[in-house]
Image (tube, rainbow, N blue to C red):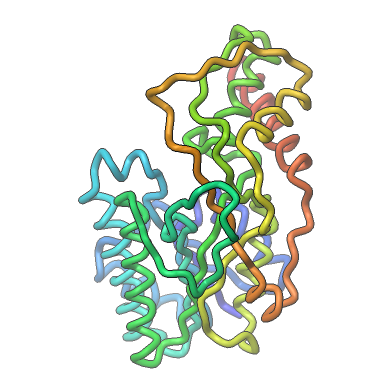
Length: 300
């Protein structure tokens, strides 16, 4: 299968390219050189690739950045998706399109609430979440026009190489700096009582690849572990792995109400046989060691 991949130079995309190759697919990787805001460029790329499938990862993925510049987030996430769908409809109308959305489309709930299933109504809060929900609606409209569109809502995922703009990677970087002796054993955090659903990025890639299978009917799919993890436990695991004993302070500027965001991936499991296989502790170990390696290489 010929797979056209946007966002190929990002954290997820750069890992997906070799995984697609291992699965027997030919990948046409479009990284930062493709501006998804430019319809003509997207049309030309799709026309040249003539893909059997398209995975759309290109996005502005920082919630914090979306609050600082909502218009930029809208142009990339919403208009970029619109351009991609128009290009596929015009240049490769039989291609399967995998639109990668976010668990943030649901908005968080109070602690101990049931996991979100796909039927749950969307209540996006941040500009980022709203652009992702709006992009998913574009996918729904494209499906009504006859395109083969898969919509996925991916919950938190991490791994070595992730930006420290995300909670697990931020903690891991700070702890790695302590371990390497370039930071005091002190760190400041927000609300550690919040609960999230964490996956290894490699398990998420496995889900995306399975959803390319033409035998899987187009639908909306959560990609989630279904396991609630308190952020405090995430931090405690990283501290234990590193063997450090930091002083942990809470900064009210980082504080958010105690909340929960956990997904139910029953539909994905039943449709594809997918199961997450990588224990969270292993994921966090790889994340921590990735930061330690990067710190050493930078020092040299």
